[in-house]
Every structure is written in C-alpha cells, then in structure tokens.
Length: 146
Image (cartoon, rainbow, N blue to C red; front, side, top):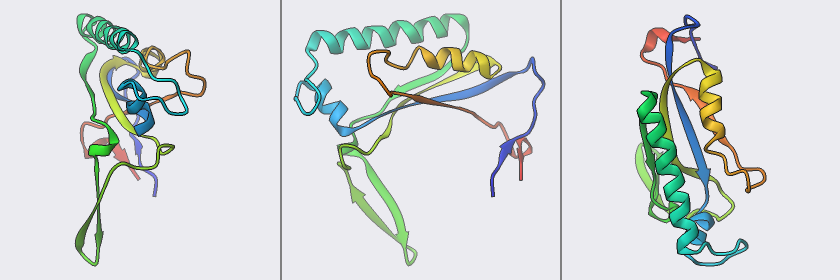
C-alpha cells in the first residue's frame, strides 16, 4: 500500500530530505586508493569538503538548513534483519556496485521546486549519472493518507 503526504498549502514551508548516495568504492577513492576510478588527491578531497561546507553555510545563512550529515563508509555499516524473530546482523562492506546512503541534507523550504534547486547543487556535474533523491518529511500521522 502506498502512502502519500497529504496536500499542503502552497505557501507553507515543508521539510525535505535530500539523500546522497555512493559506494564503498567511492570512499576508497576519497581515501586515495585507486579502483576502477582514479584515486582522489588530498587536494581534491579538501576542495570537495570546502564546497560542501560553503554550500551548507549558505543554506544556514538563508535559514533553510535543518541538518546535514555525512555517513561513515559502508564497511562500518551493519544490516539487521529478523529471521524467526531473531536479529541476524550482516557486516559491511557491501558489493562495490551497491549504492548506499552516504549523507543527507534536510532543508525547510517553500515548495518542492526550491528543494529541487538546492538538490541540484549536491549532484556532481562531472559524475555522469550521479543523482540525489528529494523526499518530503512528514510531521505527523495526519499528513499520511492511505
């Protein structure tokens, strides 16, 4: 069954989560370990961090930033499932081609168009096919409809 956010007033602020994806291979490249992709230099990693810092600082200054965090490499992840009511834990790393959530930015903006505009600044224009997802955040059960 699909749930959708209930309609909101057009001029009301809405929180959106912008989700960034990557793989263990991407973390390896940032750590300077080559793979199918060339290793990033420390200078390239510093430039990336500087860009992200400035990007989020502008959102903070505009009052639109709620939160933004990066996540550790997938090698540190644990997947928890239940089998017969018993937790079964799988350690990372996951296959290099499997995308995982690597970070997120939560913004509080007027409308999805602004959220998409912000999200476009988080997609690397040099990485063909890279994407981020934008999803509204519900504030309560009353915003869900079945």
